[in-house]
Amino acid sequence: MSNDEDSKPARKRAPRKRSARKNAAPAPAPGTAQQVQATNAGVAEATGAAAHAAAKPEREAAPATPAPAEAREPQRLLRTTMDVRWRDLDAFNHVNNSNYLTYLEEARLRWMMQLPGEWLDDHIAPLMAGCNVNYKRPIEWPEELVVELFVERIGTTSITIGHRILSAKDATVVYADGNVTMVWVDRRSGRPAPLPEAVRQACGA
Image (cartoon, rainbow, N blue to C red; front, side, top):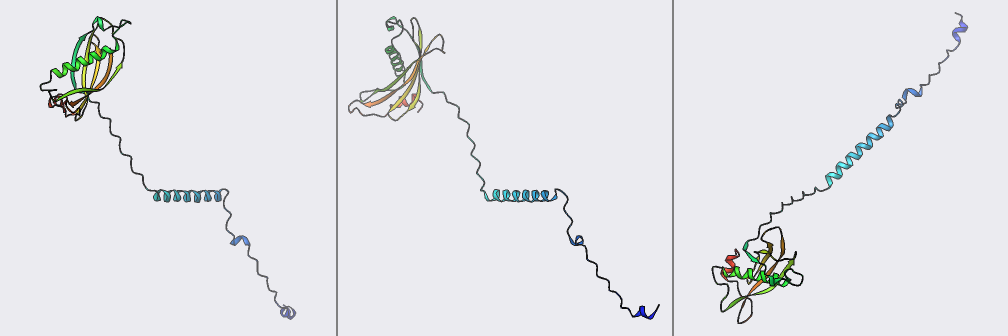
């Protein structure tokens, strides 16, 4: 090699530019970004729901509804029979409505007459304070009736007596029902008086 070649300065090589791809993050696969966003949204929603549930006070369980008590049969006072009389009929050939009250009054007298003690005396006596009769169907002649009396209410000075008028041949045939309120009063003052002990015992008080 000649001296001229040795005297020539050596050429510097320009540094190579690094490719931008070397430092760039790899492109996400198609659909990956959407999946990540959906996952993050689901996590945020679940977290918010859990926080809301934790902040919401628990509702107390509603108390159980008690089962309805079985209806008790009213205490029967009397069951008696009566015959329909020809003179009980009216122009329509059935028992006049006023005679229903007569049948019920007769039944109450029969009940009080069989009480083991006094139900009236020189000082007290019963009065009818109210009467309710529901007329179900007409009574024709001839017919045998059954009148039933039972206790509906017992008070300090009064009682409410339920009543029914049935057919003696068929107990499913109800001619009338209702009730009557009897009040015991002082004969002299006319003020209510305590029920006689015989009446209270007969009514189960």
